[in-house]
Length: 67
Image (cartoon, rainbow, N blue to C red; front, side):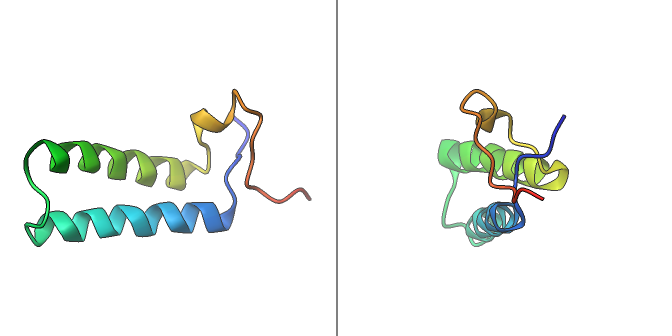
C-alpha cells in the first residue's frame, strides 16, 4: 500500500472529523445524519492515520508530493 495522501490532505480530514464530533457533542446534529457523519468522520480519521485513501487509487490521484 503506497501512501497517496499529503500532509495538508491529512490535516484537513482530521479537522473535518473534529468539527463533526463537536457538532454531535453540541447536539447540533442527531439521528441518521449524526450516524452517517460519524461514519464519515471515522473513515477520515482512519485514512489520515495511514496516509492512504482507497478512493484515490482508481483515478491514479495523489496529494502527496513527489520526492
